[in-house]
Length: 326
Ligand code: PMV
Image (cartoon, rainbow, N blue to C red):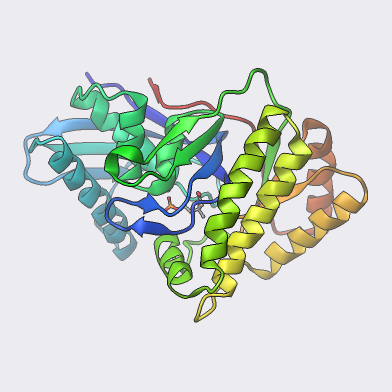
């Protein structure tokens, strides 16, 4: 009886934005993330005697609606890639459940593909070590490579399939960093991260600067992590996130993931800092804002956000662990 694989989602503090190889999902730059403890995916894979994979997402058989078809095709293509990589032919029944708080609006591709990679590793007894598992997860979704590990994780860009994988950043003791997720909109994003990246790489005049910037910000944030300097981590992460979104605004044609509430929250964060409260923003390919806080600043930040904005949901997340088999 194979075990269920559990993977937690991660939030990038230094973003992955742009692929130099679409098929292998090789990024132009390293990236660095924090695995979170609140949002995870549980996936079980069983070998079946069938010529197609059967996929259940949240106990519902995929394939019935147009959205399901897109999602299930991505999973099917990924399973084909795994069959090719490890030279076997069997198909699977996949049961995957996303444990994401209602309305959290969290992109689940990182936890989803990390859990799926680990579930196949378990069922097919591939005996992959964490580096190989990270490579396998990357082939599903770039950011999934980082969800193999807990805590702070760096994804090394590499130059081919074998050299592009994530690795943990060891920290000696606990760090007083908490994430407040402010959920504005739980709808499926209009521009996928894949398309957003492609457009930015192709047409933003600032893309070459982004590559240089990420190299220096990765170095700086690793120093800040080593010193457990949450303020510095926040400053670098916010600057990196704003620089990533500048690539979307400067693409041609221009686009943005921001919504009016996104800007409002950024303004609130600036006000909070003026009051001496530690709060820094990071934003992925969507309108929701994740706020880097300390345990001390968290309550004040949450209270202030909830007072100013009535139609948002706040979810608190701490540092989470890597892949587990349960
Ligand atoms: O792994 P993908 O294709 O979902 O891309 C993730 C892109 C960002 O979330 C915006 C940044 C990141 O590094 O996770």
